[in-house]
Image (tube, rainbow, N blue to C red):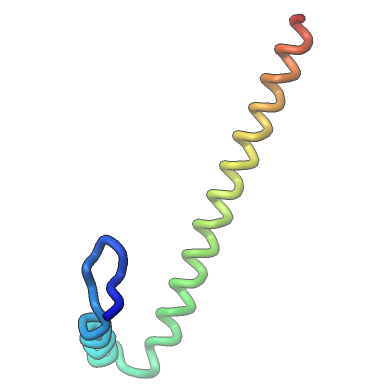
Length: 70
């Protein structure tokens, strides 16, 4: 069986967790939870991309300063 990397969670455990979530939240609430989760992941990715862009900008500014000093 397949297991999630580092967690050691197999297929049966995932199905058990899904059943518990279904029982706790009900079928109508799950799409709203997934939509919120998707928005959170998108926001996280946007933040990471913003940080990468600012690091690249500062690196290029540093290179320009080094070239100006020479």
